[in-house]
Structure formats: C-alpha cells, structure tokens
Length: 373
Ligand code: ADP
Image (cartoon, rainbow, N blue to C red; front, side, top):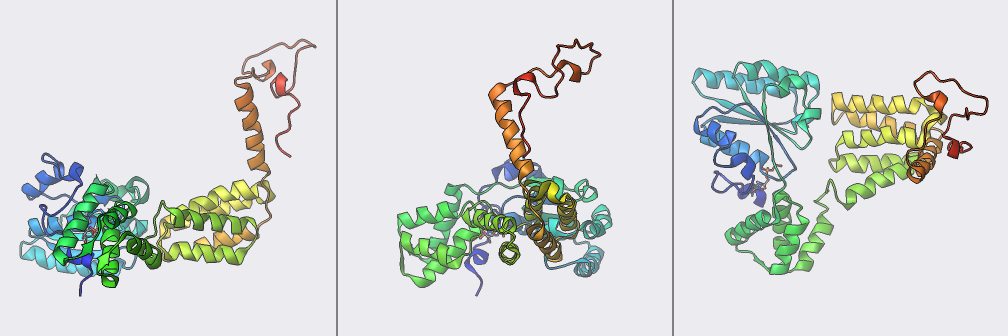
C-alpha cells in the first residue's frame, strides 16, 4: 500500500495547491509549459511544499519521460544509465525530464557531469534543493538553469490538503485536532499527511491529544527551525566545550541521521573554533574551515567523517573564551561611550604632537581599559 502522502500527490495543476508566485497566470513556468519549452530548472524551497510533485506534473503535461534520482543515494553511475535511456527516448522523438532531489548534495564533479546533457538538450533537469542554490549549486550548473523559489505552504493551504485527505479516506477528526495538525506541520504537507495517516490508524475519532501524541511518538518531524534542532546543536556545542568528546559524537550522529544539513554543523564548528578555542590553539580555526570545505565539496554521506574529525578535534583541543569575552567587554564601552575621538596621532594625517598631548592608543576616556584578560 502506498503511503497517504504518495496516494494523494496531485496529478495535475488543478489539484496542486499554493505556490502562486511560480504558477500564477503570467508566470514564466506557466508559459513554458504552454509552449512546451520547459527549461532546465532548480526548485528551491522547504520540504513538503510540492517540488517533486510539480516536477512530475510538468513531465505529465509535456508528455516527457520522468526519471528520478536522489543526490543523497545515487551518483554518476546511476546518471549514466539514465543518459542511455534518454538517448533512446530522443531517437523516438521523446523528451526526458530528470528530477534530482537534494541536488546540492552532489559535489562539484558530480554536478559537472550533468552539464553537456543539459547543454545539448538531451536531458531537461529539474533539481530540487532545500538550500540556497546560489551557495550550494556550482556556478556552471546554476548558469544553465532557472531557479524557482517555493514557499512554505500557508496554514490555510495545509488545511485544504488535510481536508481533501479526510474526505477521500473518510477520516473522523475534530476541528481542534485539525487546527493543531496544520499548525504543527510547519508548512510541510508531507508531515501533515504522514501524521494524519499515523493517527488515523490508531484512533477512529481523532482528537487534538491524539495528534499531539503522534508528533511526539513518531518523531517524524525534525524541524529544521524547531526545538529538536536547537536542543541538539546546543548539546553538541556544550559537549565540545566541556571536552566530552563521546557526548559530542553522539549528538553529531543524532543530527546527521535526522537529516541535518552538514554545512549547518560545519559552520558552527567554524564559530566554535574562535569563540571557544581562540588563540589557545589557533589551528582550530583552520581545521574548522577545512571541515567546512570538505563538507561543501564532498557532501553526505562521506562528509560525516570530516565532521566527526572536526567535532573530536574541537572537543579535545585546549579552550579559551578570552577572545569572545574581550569582544563583549569592548562592545560594552562602544555602546556606552559612542563615537569617542580616535587619538590624534593614530589618525591618518601627519600630526605634530605637543608634549602634553595624549599619546595612548585607546581614546583618552577609556585609556586604561583592558578587554583581553
Ligand atoms: P517536496 O517539496 O519535498 O518535493 P513533495 O512534492 O514530494 O515535496 O510533497 C510531498 C507530499 O505532500 C505530496 O505527495 C503531496 O501529497 C503533498 N503536497 C506537497 N505539496 C503540495 C501542494 N502544493 N499541493 C498539494 N499537495 C502537496
């Protein structure tokens, strides 16, 4: 049996909800569909907002073959097989749309392999990504595609999707439960439908408490901006700070296995290297930047090893928060005293100092301040 979200996946534009910016009357995409001139594209936006769905609909309308890859689990070999099929299709005068989910997870080399096929029109690429393509998709590929930005679905749009499911599957659920479900789904239709499917398998008359419980139990929902995400990154940082490398490793693995973006963690390591280690071990910053670059170029799953290296390095390194404290100490004075005059002899002009002129380096008012302990 298909999961509910899959079963209810809209099959045409009529059933597709929201994303008016992309699909409005005079939109580029609408016109391209009508004129049967679909360009290669990147769909950028949060999960469960219709990226895969729209790609499938477009393939349907334009009578193209639809091929699908996930950049997380497939590579160049899989791509080559699709290219062979696309060549066959072309001989029969048929188009091939290749949908690549999480395209940002492919490294530069993998993304580069796509270029000639896009260029020659053998393949129409539709890449989906939750990360800003300006940073995460390499420039050569980016210059050959059009980027369309998907918005989180609004609560009233999620509600429509929930209501359709209730009707189709004859589900009994009260108003409060629907309200809770649409709020907690955070604009992600897949989450809304998965939870609904799960609760409806457990109870005949669904109430708010059932939905609440389902969210807790299923732990389905790893909200990139929600509590779990913040709790785990906070636990990771505190463990590294305390030199508890085993705990740090545990939280790292929890995050990655839940689908956290490796670059988000790598960025936090870069911050940590200066905030918590600083000049006690100034190599930590280079190590963190190297980890970041490695994650950027390699992607998951391999870059988890770069991350664990970074995390253990940070946890075991000597620590000092002196730079962090110094910044904040100085910040207090900057805020308190406003624009104090820079001592004359430090200004970028030739000056002749008299003996009695102040020749310190800090402004006179705070001349004895020590920020760095
Ligand atoms: P993603 O943006 O992650 O590719 P999908 O398009 O796979 O999301 O959506 C997952 C499921 O959520 C679909 O199978 C469909 O049931 C529902 N869904 C997502 N977006 C929409 C939408 N805009 N209108 C109606 N249903 C949607």
